[in-house]
Length: 281
Length: 66
Ligand SMILES: Cc1ncc(C[n+]2csc(CCOP(=O)(O)OP(=O)(O)O)c2C)c(N)n1
Ligand code: SF4
Ligand code: SF4
Ligand code: SF4
Ligand SMILES: [Mg+2]
Image (cartoon, rainbow over all chains, first blue to last red; front, side, top):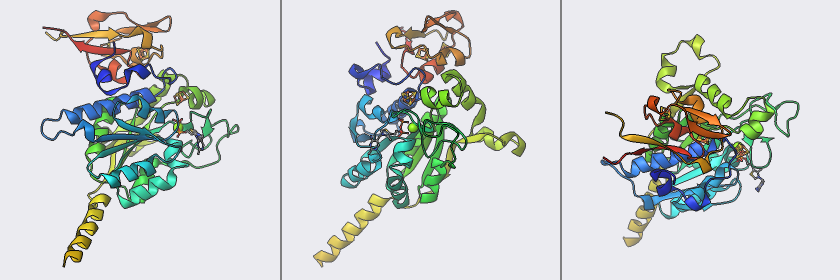
């Protein structure tokens, strides 16, 4: 018997999931379920379960759409945001939540990401960022750090990595944030705010892939990888209270940028309304 | 009294990753034969961190019937 939350929001007959021992994906998927549960039960401003749509692409992480028991669609590699854009345009009242990997959303799907962000289309994109292509055996991805190893970078990665949260901000996203596996409670709160946000919101969640990224880079097991997150990923309030010196080598987690630029489907609806009005005259 | 909650383990789902035990603030849990076990239930403060960080939903808290 799993917990009530798991019973309520996951397809129990598909569990236990097939992810490796200690894979971060299970924790992030749970964060999403807790965030949605808390929004559904928010007494002041609750959201409707039937209005939630989960969309994923292809990758270990993208399997989450199969486990979560909502209106959900598991699409093709790199195209989750494209499918999600269509769903949102067809029915703007839906909360369309994209669960995607670093490869899925910033390599093959990079164009969809930047243009949905540029338009400020009201999707919530949650990237399970493990710095690697997990599903296909550990090839480097656009977020693999320079110098790190992957099956396709046996002597070290020559590329410079994307910072997906900053990439989204640069492309025009009106909400961009970073979370991780270790700081689960903080990450749940960030995901809640991202879902509530009207425009395009992106949460880059640092995951762990002990099997490929961890092993190839001698980062230790899941516990050691989470210890690294504990020591080096610092929640906003604490980060801002630290001296420049203490911040060296650390990364901030929390909401990184935020504005209220007009949301795309609302602007689109205005065009439709003005054309209809003009025709009636 | 805070003891209105109880720890539950779904052993069949545990993959023995050790995350819950490593980050339990009260050192309540340990891994034996690749499965989580409760070493010292008395010390548990029901913070729920093990439940939040278990990738496999194999450990969680339930409210006890009054
Ligand atoms: C069009 C297409 N190209 C390539 C693949 C092979 N493929 C499947 S998953 C994947 C990358 C997965 O990496 P990521 O999105 O980071 O997900 P992860 O497995 O790490 O969670 C690739 C290249 C595919 N399925 N379809
Ligand atoms: S290969 Fe990596 S990302 Fe995929 S399930 Fe295993 S640990 Fe997770
Ligand atoms: S609820 Fe908290 S104190 Fe109790 S076992 Fe879990 S992590 Fe440890
Ligand atoms: S975190 Fe979950 S899967 Fe890992 S050892 Fe603990 S109960 Fe088992
Ligand atoms: Mg990946």
